[in-house]
Length: 322
Image (cartoon, rainbow, N blue to C red; front, side):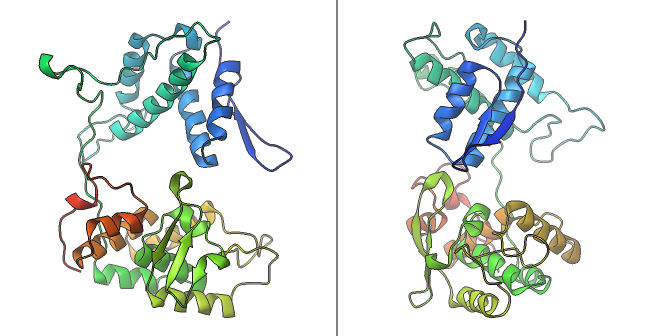
């Protein structure tokens, strides 16, 4: 009987999210990932593996490299419905970035299984690259190439339009955290009252990407906005999450990612900035800091990036006028 992966979510007694796909080995790997990574990473990994084993309906021990190439071909095929071609690479299927992420999840699974000494699986079927020249066979070339794209940053008029379109002091403080501090969406939602140091004009990021933490400077304008929100809008709550729901049956609970997305959706409609995202607000901040003369290493520290200059990193961004 062919295994059919089914993604099942449940929360244990300690409040931890647990995911399973209905296969002992795959579920063991998801438990391994859950012990090392944050819930969003575990969820993305589980979904990627579900997609793979739905497209390649085999037992993990039976998967071979040919199946990996078949999966890549299937993922690159045009989606159902009206044909849409991406401007960045002219392709109609899933983006190379999405496919590479899914391959990374699959490779992680087989790397884990190959490491265990109680299984017959001894090699990872996901190739790390294709050798392009005989003298460079050890290095190889990427299995999938992704287009080099630069993040679009907002101009001064667009920034003013975004700030004018916000409905609450809470929303203004959250947007300023991204525009002035370069925070990611998850970092904004993870802020706690005790993470802020107004006197030093600094904030502590305790829930950064990958579990990394950092202390960053941020403009007094942000702290003014936060003060207005705390004084005039934030309800009395029994927790220290900074940004909370202001109205409705969930009033006082920590704001969710869906809630922040809904706020930005409203801003997009009111400003006509259809491509506005949290990522764009963050990169607007980091680009302006670099343009203002901040050292690359300092900008990378502000962003929570590893200190590297890979393609598409901050060091490759062009200078634009504010």
